[in-house]
Length: 336
Image (cartoon, rainbow, N blue to C red; front, side, top):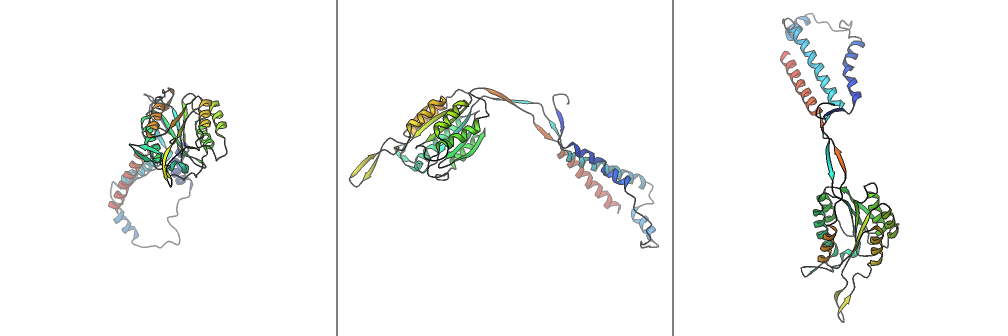
């Protein structure tokens, strides 16, 4: 530990032992036989060697000694680079002032129904959800957001993250039918609960948006709601779809209910069991208003996260070793 709270850490301390490896090899292995019997003898070799290696210069011994020290220094720098020496900076506290929110979005085939009115024009449910939910995501500054997409099966699209842009992008890239044509509400809730179990209570919630009833999957929605209540996870449910639309037919215009499959009672029970709230969205304006209401959730301050910035040492040691290696090569080339 050094002054100011900065600490030096070695990731691979055993690597430092290798600094003695060249010396161990040099002093333990037998030296090569310079006067081998089978060696080719050239009468004038000594004269050539002295001429090209500058053996007769007075500073030759001193230069050789310096080169040995240079080699040793290069080796030490290489070992230091491999040992993973790094500086740990002063601890930095990151206060958490938001919530952990999981958005579970229905991608079943019925989300393609064009019964959501925007500026007097009908749009599909999924297109409106993407527009409104993206705005909601952008407003949740300080929250960790996650995304679960579900149809016949539930999939974790984005784990909890502070990166709101990524969550919004993953939602906008979602394609209808990718998770199957049916609606597995219970499995979607179970997947979201699983991701939130280990997080602080009273700061986590799930926002469930669907336009149908549970008709697929393994887990029952009410069983998932009871589990969420045990884990102090609030579930806000949003039932999506118009109550009635006019459809031209053979005998004139007919009024139909495109949301007849929406299980309002189950959504209300899920919200009630977990301390959440049920909302009904019949058009784009009401959906935006619902998300605005949820957006008013009071942030709850949770435990601080402490991080220490890490600065690795190897770029400097390895860079210096490379520079010294180039210098060594230049010296050798100049003497040859």
